[in-house]
Image (tube, rainbow, N blue to C red; front, side, top):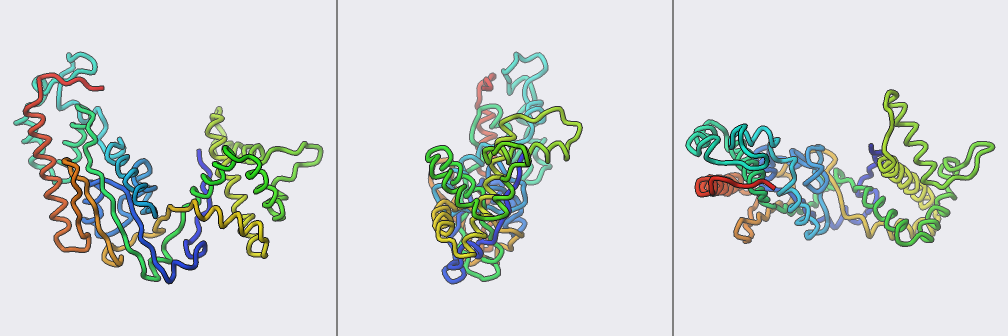
Length: 342
């Protein structure tokens, strides 16, 4: 369960980007790069930085190239991108196989496999073979990709929102490592009437810790939404409560800063240093971006650079995919009769 924070336009947070533009990075995998080039738009695959949160329908980016490579590595092995295990492993091994042991000889033959994929389009072939290799050998089979974007057009800058999860994470780091500073931030936020009223206990009640107040609201919302639910885990309640508290603190600081509160301005300035995640609120046509270059880490460790605005970009990606498919089939052909699955 999660209480989402409000999202704000980047230009509302940092006016300087109107003039300076941004260089942004998106960590993903080759499958998603192929989908982006086929659709011609950013946002066709996407999720937070790539990886676990793909399919949310928004294109997340970061200011940090190293962070983008980390998310690209995650996307290369994220189960989200592979076919369900039961849908793949019927191709190898029979029902009498030992548990956790599969044989490329007792199940479908390589000739049958080739016939099976012959009628598929390239994407489906790629996903099927990648999934086989993932479940049989545990390979990180999707090649990691980082896309570098240069964004300067005013309409695109207006379409970029920053991810307030970064502000939440910054506040959480204060709670964990600098409790006194976290408490000071809350005291500053209490100068905002709305935030102060939210924390105000009902008559006869004791003053509660702000996270307890948020947790009670989260639980009430949960029960209103799911009246037949038996229970919700404490960890889920805490996660959602901290989301809600961070949102309340942030909005209070924004209101106070607008009124000239110097302490609130300073806290927001510090939190800005932690914000490095952004997303395009709406789909963006690839050709409308000032510059778009993909860096693909090939199986041998070298990096292939592809200009995504070049007319041959899709063909270059298709060639890489075809080479991977051929290598996977060779691997299956030369594998031993049995391969243990971890």
